[in-house]
Image (cartoon, rainbow, N blue to C red; front, side, top):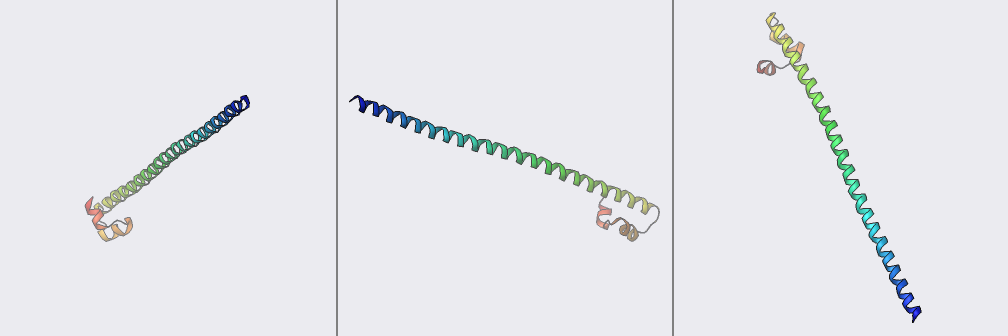
Length: 100
């Protein structure tokens, strides 16, 4: 009888150990998933900020170049250079030149 009780306790202990191990594995996996998602979000935000800065710089450069061309075109026109030549030199369109 004592052997049966001892065996039963051993079985309970084994079951508890397996259940605990399964729970710990599950918790570890869940934690790993959460950390992975967190890292992914951080990387995504970083990349988004980098891309936004890059695009902002490009836009600023483009606007600066266009502003310079418009200023040059205005000076050329004031000096009496014909519109067609000004457009050829600056690469601006008549619409862009008159719109600004």
